[in-house]
Amino acid sequence: MSWKIERVEGADLDLDEVLEVYRASGLGERRPIEDRERFAAMLGHANLVLVARDEPGALIGIVRAVSDFSYVTYLSDIAVTLGQQRSGVGRALIAATQAEAPGVKIVLLSAPAAVDYYPRIGFTQHNSAWVLNP
Image 1 (cartoon, rainbow, N blue to C red):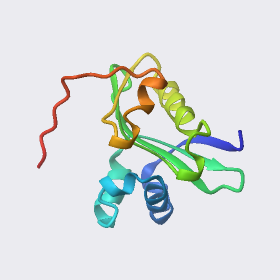
Image 2: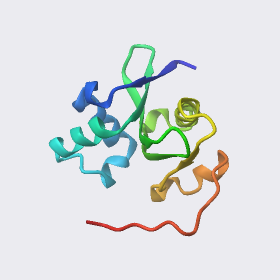
Image 3: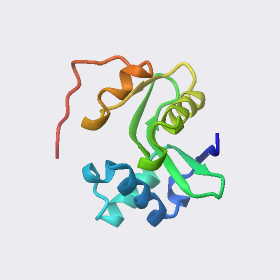
Image 4: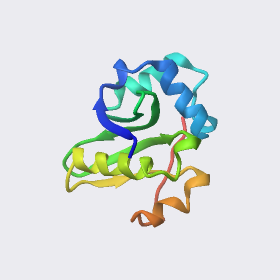
């Protein structure tokens, strides 16, 4: 393992560095990365943010989540740069999310490209999720 996971305050992160991870992961295609103000608010209002950095310190992955730390954690985003995907970074970020809120279920909506990933790491599909767009 040549990376480190840590919990951070989303508002303290370098916005450009985070946006680059979203672009480099492919998740930026489904997030408002061109709206810097909105994206900064997304980071600042998430109450559970974890990052993965490589040994030189470059950001290579991020989890942005909202949790009540009692019943459920909604994993809003998990982004890992393409060069680090399949290296265990995503799995480690999810494990770190579980460690921050032990005994709490994690819920997420999968990006289409990741639908096959989540069952392989222990998630079960839930068929009654609903979305109400603004």
